[in-house]
Image (cartoon, rainbow, N blue to C red; front, side, top):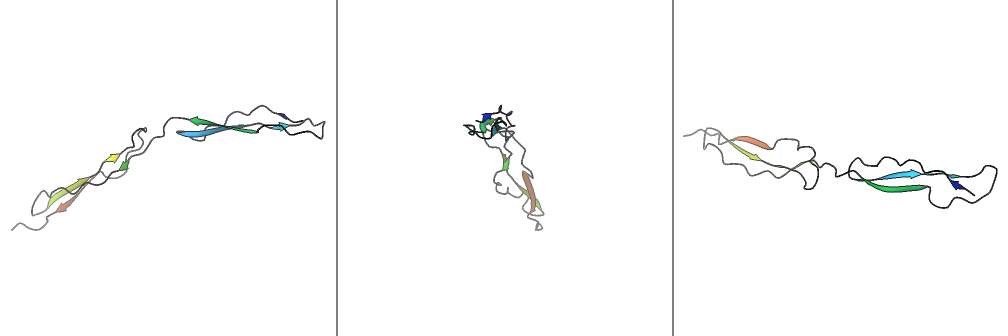
Length: 113
């Protein structure tokens, strides 16, 4: 009959953060002097859970605020709006949001009378 080899070493976790799995295997070996016999009982593979802490969560932009009131009523003023970079609660902080958190534009460009 077949006999199991020793278990291999566990593989590395399938993820470097969060939940993943590790695997190991073994081989059913037969005595070469016999040309018959039963297979090994049980499984040749084994899997176990692994966890390396929460994965970092990158920020994502929230909604833009409304435009501010123009700084001038004529001859060109400026107004702006902004948005916040929001990170999910309970996670390790990942990368900041890419792009501008504030933008401005010229307004009321007509000449004062």
